[in-house]
Length: 422
Image: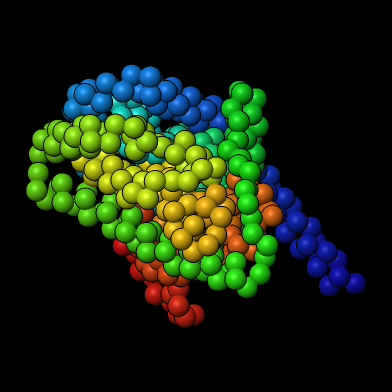
């Protein structure tokens, strides 16, 4: 009898403890959601407005050198002569490092300036930095301990990703999966989901629409169509490796050849102006998301994916700010459209596969990628997207957008490798 009473007492204590921890984590997620929802939508509005102004006034490309000099000056004055970007965010979740609030403020306005003047970059990489800096500032305000700081950082990443893409479930899983490949941070699921859903509600209340596209001309599921999808996945894997190589090596080349950051951004500006004069359509400036949307409906130009890689690599390599994920989606859509048609797939459908496959190949997150496909295109083509995510995850090797991303387990065999993406 006494034993049963003692056991019941222990269960009540554990239940109470779990309840307090559960409530605490949800409250963290809610707090991060409110702050990130407001800040994330402000960032979305600002970058959209900057890009819209650039489309109306393409001559702003000639102000790119001035914008670059201002960005370099601002970062140096703020104490960041060498910006570590999203890599610092990933490291802060595994260590005691912090992402200062001024990091978020800098990338907030620097990304807008880059888009205003025609630089080729995305927003999601920037939003991860802003989300981490804002949420950590909130954590410091409430004197959170180290473990809770890691948790609220992931909440901030989820929230800002949701604000930019309008895909709360993929955003939630992405922040849990991208840090250490092979170890999913399950404890963060509920608070990250709470943050994502609150941001999604704010996103809709402020009049922003979530990204969602019609999946066009999906072929009948069968061996032939799956083999064609497999062929497209192999091609996307190679392009993912090429994209990561171009981004990393261009940055390294600029730093090695031009040690002065001001001269570096001027040289990159001159090159971007020249490229824009050679290819004046504007398709490769800014995020270029409209190019990806167009590839989901009409044939893409064969050279489009290569030109987007070049424009983005030069922009980010010389010192301008922004993200890599939207350019990745553009590269994937245009490549998938062209290469898929050669394989016999409907080009519009192949563009959708290319978007998701390339995203998976560069971030090494197959689960998030699969969920992203459902939120963007619905579940009708889930088998095809599962194939392309699985193949691209394995065949892209250990390439990745973020060099601080840890890959804990081999992609080829059940063995612990604990290595960085390259």
